Length: 122
Image 1 (cartoon, rainbow, N blue to C red):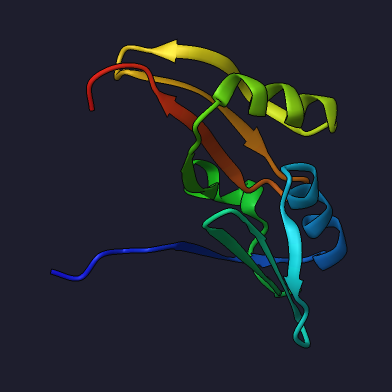
Image 2: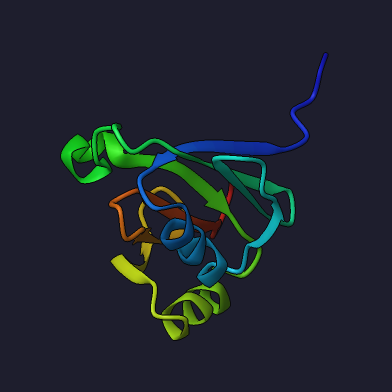
């Protein structure tokens, strides 16, 4: 059976530089900048930002502005890292009844992302 080896997220953004700054604050680095795009990566995750000036702003999508869930190996230190970098915290770190310790962040354009770590059995 085939195995998924990496995640890529593709997001439509109005401001490539501002949006890439948000991901840099999450510890991503720019991997490539083809015309109209900025690709950022951290570990086994890539975010591909495409400039789409006519796209509906993510804030107008409500719950549909969530685009991903990152599993990390040390959620508490990652939380401190992103807070220190001034990232907007949408939901503070907490241990949830579904065996996850997690928090949520929001980009300047309104894209939302949850970041968590397993606390028990999966």
